[in-house]
Length: 272
Image 1: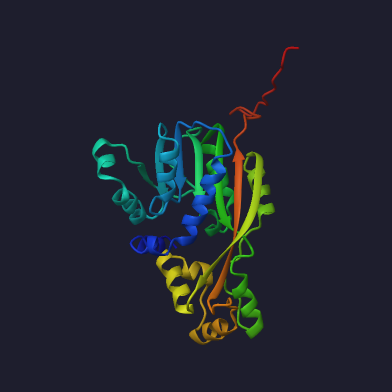
Image 2: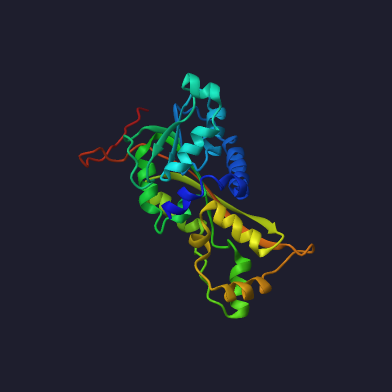
């Protein structure tokens, strides 16, 4: 999948309608928390909308853009202003996998991740790594795809007897349990549905290809199966194809450790 994302760097922005909308909604949720992080990171930054939002919102913080596809990071640099590049104020770029970040523990005050974690077969190792690099009191804010994503495709598959090859996604309760297992405290989970419409099936498939996720999201179907599926796919009153995406939002904090490095338990006594 890394090669698909890398190849999509030039076309990504033309199709990233959902990611931009979800990023806007993630940013609105940050209005509800009062934090002043010294270091912020966008994990899976793609072409950089998220890190630019964080840099604008927390102007004094050190901004870090992280992606495992190097061409995406080059796009982040290319979309920065010339003045930022001249004075060295643009985001720092890091080519890395979220499951193995080359960062010291307790480094970041805020981690943002927009529509990334659901591509992992098991998000728990990534959540543990994000917990490791966050400082005590640091915040993880993320959005992923949930199980009702592309429910129209699954319904159409069942209706025509075609194979359901689309990727399955975890629900918010499972993700909440993973956050606790990774060491986070006070996870807050919620979900919403966003529906996009397309004039024709070819436009829907083209968007997924431009994003670099077509095969990972939809699986592989023969062209005849796709024809049958698209004929059964529901359309709106204007005859446009409907594609629903379930968006799971998560917020969680890194609490003070209950144990120190040698395994001893930390017990605090408060004077009366």
